[in-house]
Length: 127
Figure 1 (cartoon, rainbow, N blue to C red):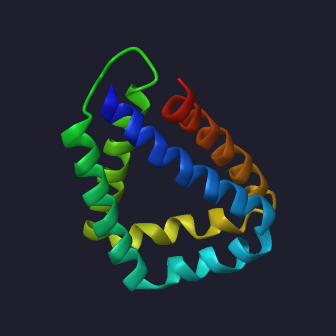
Figure 2: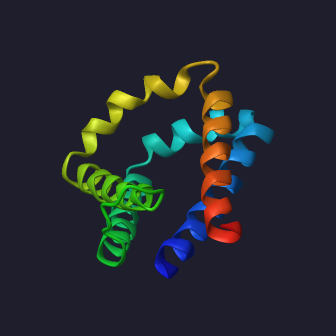
């Protein structure tokens, strides 16, 4: 359970920071995220980082249980799969470019990310 708590603290702080950033600086992210999707260096780096973090989580926390900690395992597997897809099929990302031009997307994503951040922060620091 110590591993779950540590990973929940990390994920919680990252999600909270990013979610609050999106909510408070939505115009900045609307402008910058499409630029990231155009830059192949960032996509390759993102693929490497996703694989590294996915493997680290899976190797240390591959628990398929019926409580909140399974979400950490799922995040690890999603990160690993995302990293593999970014490196093996880099052109697939072009399918998602139009997704990031939806007008209300950033407000909705910001709220969802903050909710996930609060969830993981609660279990990481207060549970």
